[in-house]
Length: 143
Image (cartoon, rainbow, N blue to C red; front, side):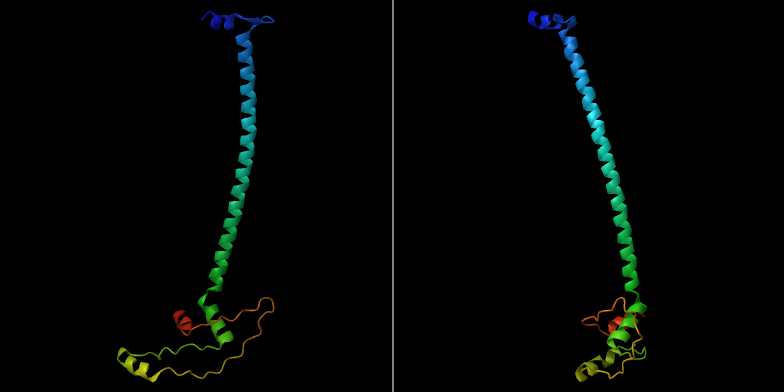
């Protein structure tokens, strides 16, 4: 026990050793706090950059959603079906009754001869690719 008490009473150049150790620890803590604050500032800057990137990407996603909504407009799809595929609108009176379905299924389907309407001159900026298979239902579902 006396050795432990002597540690508190021992002096180096007039300053007790325990005070010197305490002073070194305080300076070490001050340096550690300053380094932590500097790292925190860098982390805050990085988080702000990420938040800005997220906002930019969200704007891009919103713009793409608007573009998809414009491309999926029923009127546009109907016009493309008529221009590119030569499809015609279905006559609203061309409906089958439930009782006539067995007769229709026995006769089979016959293609209806239609004359495709000439397509107006499209802008040369972006040609529209023809879809692989489009059914007549797409045109009637739009209305």
